[in-house]
Length: 478
Ligand code: NAD
Image (cartoon, rainbow, N blue to C red; front, top):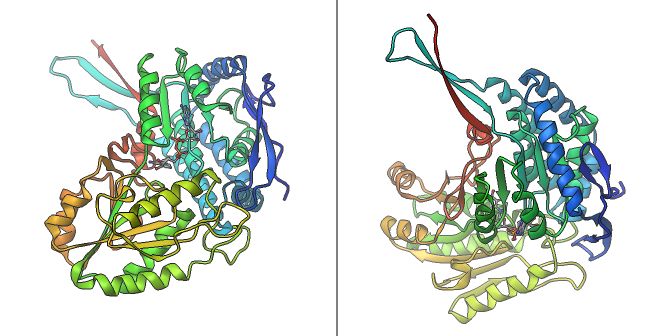
């Protein structure tokens, strides 16, 4: 299963583009160079933009049923290529192969679900206050879309945008992460092999701020969809404002986990460890601040410690491994900084706390206890394999502490009390809340944040709605 030749997709052609610039793609498990990625020149970006307008005018006129047929065929190609794509996802991103397979399975499900749902984009007939008049509200594809996505889920981050846009009848130009390009290219190849018309999907790479500045200065895009950090989201939103481009912002999080004394403690400890170290904690909805009620604190920590110590770290291509490397060397110093800051502020290091292995960007699964809310890791998104824990006494106190940050993406609670669950559903400021599990997304449910974590959704009918515009017309019929 060789790592593929990396190309861009511009105006229906797989190309190296006209720029002389390129960059290496590094395997985080051993630091080796596995590919060379071409960059788009300004002329390439202009060609992509023009073709996305031309492609839009072809694709929007096709029926949802004929669009679904193309997308279904592409889903079949992804299934045929399943093992190769999963292995290359692990090689470029680092996550365990089992996680790559689950991610690709979800991406295929997303494509199929959106393709079907595209057939159910209904308008409304609104009763008129005037005789013989009809009001009609139609849902139409919003126009050419521009998207930028992070590297942590190379398949689903890409597919949430591509499948939603295409099912709604939009064209889309996407810049996946330069660190994990092969997975998005594989999705693009499945779609072009399935007969997607030229220009309906463009895939470009380059220096991210230069690409976004160029694409968003054009009057062609009518929608921007971004998955990444809060500061970059704010910057892109400012660029989009110049052309009144509407936005969906899927941004960072800092999810609280509230472990109450009336929960199933063993089950909670097991789930918390599995959830925290999934993708080495490089997950926007990763459980991050663990608040444990006083009366069960020591018991929960003992169980959590056992679970963290059992995590097997190594090359993600090894089927036995539960946690791979961080995506890149640059993340190691960031993790070191979080641990030393927490310890110097009074936290106790229970497990891990430093890099492991000299080759590859591996950081040990790390557990900290008695971490003060003022430590950096309790307020800044760590995006790594560190679990900071702290105590709490009452429901009211933990709600205040959970809601105290500007983030509002996901939140989790473990409790046997229906009353506690009911209060949390009302009071927790998060776009997604899971009680007695860490499950906050399915292809048919709305995924999205509140507060600084962004707005707009991916998944569910809400995920299609963001690619639609409402158009009204009235008619006197006699
Ligand atoms: P980042 O914002 O620096 O980069 C994210 C992606 O955007 C990268 O692929 C990068 O190439 C691109 N990018 C960066 N600057 C850009 C610019 N000026 N113009 C266009 N593209 C640009 O974030 P990161 O630290 O690399 O990724 C992790 C972040 O993404 C975390 O904050 C995480 O929570 C967030 N994230 C959010 C979701 C969600 O659905 N809410 C999902 C995954 C990741």
